[in-house]
Image 1 (cartoon, rainbow, N blue to C red):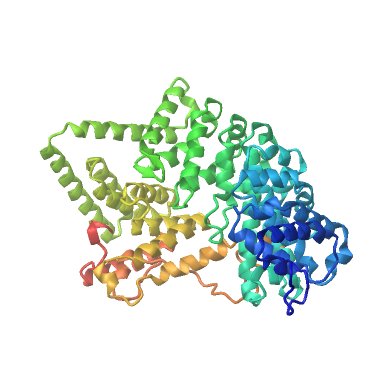
Image 2 (image 1 turned 180 degrees about the vertical axis):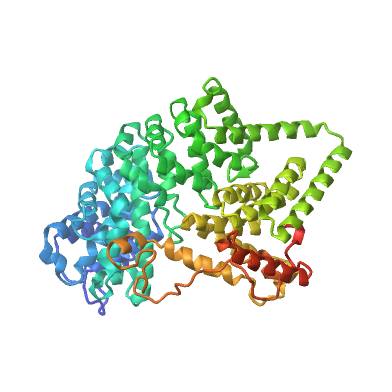
Length: 626
């Protein structure tokens, strides 16, 4: 370097080196910089390291710094921070191990060649020390990210796996990460470490922004831990170490909330585990995991297909099929008319075929399948036989069947209007038996109507089943607004906050995009009752809720007072029939979710229907849907 800019406070620094116009001189200067930096104690070292981090994030595939020894330099800096606490606490050196691990992770996330160079440079041992928690949770976050990238490649995975404790540490971190971040950072704003706050918000945020970023980083810490575990889960020799009952039981709840929606999280790891026979055995033995997979499969979760894959694999394995079929069959029957889901084509046909094979497998052992599950499978197979027969049926006969189904449906609507909910449900069942299988739009309405009846009859499981069938038949999939809302209510009745939240959000999305003329007259297309349910479920599914309950930062159900230090509206959310959307904001007379068959609630129900009649059933029977 011929000349140092006179205004540089650190002569000979990295930024001065990078201004060198001569490529050969710059290369030799950068090489020297990387070699000498770990042994220097000059102030201002965090500046070039943060600059390198920005470069690594922006140009992760650029080999220039890789060839000049950046991995060796970053590994040495992490070791220095771990061993020399005097240096670490001086100036702003506390940031350096964090940035160093982040640089390693960024340069290894895309290029296997770079990952090999990193392993040869000795980055794994210092990263493992950070993963152990030798510093703090923010360094654990970037360490598990970097190790996850290194474990992704076939050539570098063995180097990661050679450190036997990495898997154990990742499992521990996935299980406890939310509690760690909550108790060490989120809970008490006045105790937050300053450098943590600066890392989260780049020094630009206050307490509120720090809290939001803490949720995002906690979610990433958990999801990146799961990603690292997932790399091990592809290898059969590690399945036993992963499939500990207490860990498996937690996996379905590791979803990242609305913070990290791009990560398949716990269900993604369960899907990998299910690809191994030993893994399927462990999951089949966990009734809680099976129930959770059924809930995810019958939901609007983006990773719905992963849960379906798990259930199908469990049924196709003869060693686990008999263990899960009673719980799995009803959920899959509800999904048997999905045409396509993501990359899964003709998924419904696959579901039906697998269930039919199960019947054949267990045919000689009729006691191995409980009557309810067998009846539902038999009903599915009968309906598919109906579909085949209808293909050869004259069109006139199909029109007659469809007309008959319409008559019975209208009878059901009339019974519903008079308050005979059980009678209406029975009529909708009769109409479904008559309605041609190809008349999907009509069947969507019938299933959705019957789901509403089951809600009022306080039968949430039956309501979920029918709403799911309607959503599977609808085109596009999972976009029938009324069924989404009804299933959201049913999930709420069962205390399934996440599933209820996802359906309620999709319902609001459908309302906001609706071309319904009645809705378009409203200033706000989003119903108030849906907003209240979303608010309730976001609190119930809050990322830190379990940790907050454990550490006294949130009150359990039934308690009174503040939630996570803020005043909240603790009033019960109200439901509404979809007809309310077309009533120009008129107040409804009932709460459907709390409706029971007693005289007082029956009177309220009758009054509500009388009001609807006075307005010409405005919205109540839109599209013949109640």
